[in-house]
Length: 85
Image (cartoon, rainbow, N blue to C red):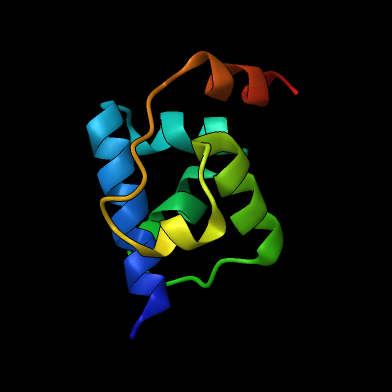
């Protein structure tokens, strides 16, 4: 089981469903676009701090990030509020 690949698939699917670019999603997550790209392509491991940030912004539990299709994220008021912090 490749957890990096599962996380990458989940992030990519959620971003595409929401209709946002990597740059837009990265800003909302508090990450750089290259970091998000590396996470989506499973070429970088996620830190616990980043994992927590992903969960807060995407409104999910940590385990959901490793199950493609479980996270359905929208550019919601929640994401915009979090970005403003």
